[in-house]
Image (cartoon, rainbow, N blue to C red; front, top):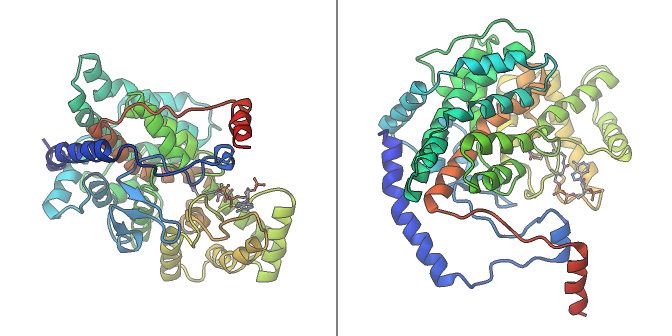
Length: 427
Ligand code: HAX
């Protein structure tokens, strides 16, 4: 058994007992109330989910297991995976053990390549990525063991095996989709000595003379890892997983949600918007030009991608991290300069629109410009990169949920007539 799995086997039983007695003792305490506006408004702010891997206070942004993101910028994705699952960063031996475990599981079955080859050449990279995950469902350890009558206490262990088997393969799958979809040449084999993030950079096949792209990939894969459990992709995946559909089904399903323009696809949309301004104004636009362009976008009924958030009310610390990276490695890049100028302009515009609750940039406002700088100019691919990272959080949440024995998710819906009755009864 790997060191990480052994550690989890120690951690989970007492945690399950603790949560069990906590709920038994305080089960009837009220933790949240739901107004009619919230029922019709995407359940914004309703506290009714549990997520122990991370939380997102509106005034701070992502906190992973009690550690603010700004203190994790230099950590590698494998370290973050360990943190998400166990609540602590790995020591050197634990990190090596986890990296070896991932290496052992990285071989992608050949039929995945055949399925990707059979897809239309103009398929969206996200459709290709989620198909690749789903088509591997027959490998699920959870599904196999469930069919054999696995005990409920073992659900987490089989989910863990699926999580490692999937996470290990995602860099190779993601990189192969990039190369195939954008005619970059044949797949590049995995480097047996490279860590998860570096290996991904290698397999993409983009020039990386000073290993700056490798650094960006590690940072990117760390920053997008998790964002509590109420966002569309994590919540969808968790609902699917609660039916004991294995992680191949649930991760793929959740990531289909990430493919939406109000969620992960915003990074593709945002770079598109930035480049559109540059094309229109013949280079990096002035603040005045940007201000007008922002108003034109709003007045045409569109959102300004990369700005606003359902939870956050500050500049997203993940955006701060990308901004700092850009200032260090590409201060004069015109696309990056435009991102900075948009940051100096757009919040002031959005503040004037009363209904918008968060005028600040989110994670998707700057990441694309950095990828563009290193030659990844095909921005319909960007959400795949997001997905590879987000799989860390979605898989960790599923392992924890199955270890805690949480039941199937099934909130109650009412027809509008039902809500009218409730409201009328209150006078
Ligand atoms: N541009 C224009 N209008 C915006 C806006 C923006 N950037 N942000 C919010 N609004 C609008 C909403 O569309 C909504 O309008 P309607 O009432 O007419 O529908 C109104 O302001 C109130 O919205 P809100 O309460 O401030 O925000 P929501 O919680 O409803 O939505 C969103 C949050 C992220 C979906 C929203 O801010 C948005 O559409 N932003 C642009 C797209 C984007 O960047 N998405 C990525 C978010 C981060 C993420 O998940 N990454 O994966």
